[in-house]
Length: 212
Image 1 (cartoon, helix red, strand yellow):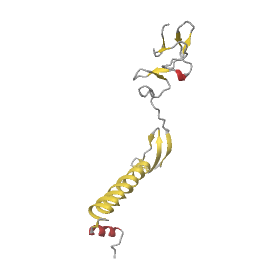
Image 2 (cartoon, rainbow, N blue to C red):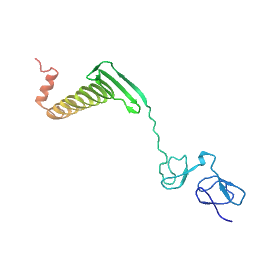
Image 3 (spheres, one colour):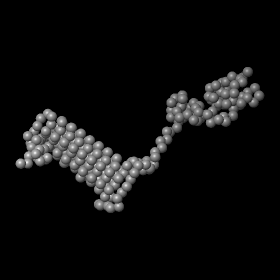
Image 4 (cartoon, rainbow, N blue to C red):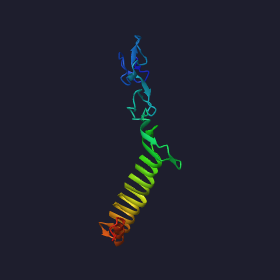
């Protein structure tokens, strides 16, 4: 008796079976001593060819079970609009006086930009944000500006934070010219490691303790 072969995968199969044991393709016995194949009625039994290894795989497979190659791109759905945004009608220097922005819009982060900028990400002259830049003053977690208070504060003049820099720097770890910190580095430092007389005089004068 001649050997029967699946028209899908080409592998041999015994007589009398209705499904190819190699690829799962449905076989229909036509009663002519040979088997022919028909497309499967169920989506689960439909096969396609892996572009990497060339073997038959289910059309519903995300990765090839033979070689592990990805067969379908993962689709990530972003919420196009969520959060909150508001701008004041008053503008100065082409910027809204106040801009508040939190969340995403069309899959992109909302960034507050204004004279007063408030948001998760913000740029302004006076900025309150988790991450931001404040030209004059900034307050938040990771901030850059002339002056500011933040957990991580990179300041040019006056900075206060857990990690702070500035001409005057106050924090747990600080770097500047006049430094008040647990651990500090600068020209005049008042810290747990020592007291510079200039730093002590400066900071006492800053809070008015040197006044008669």
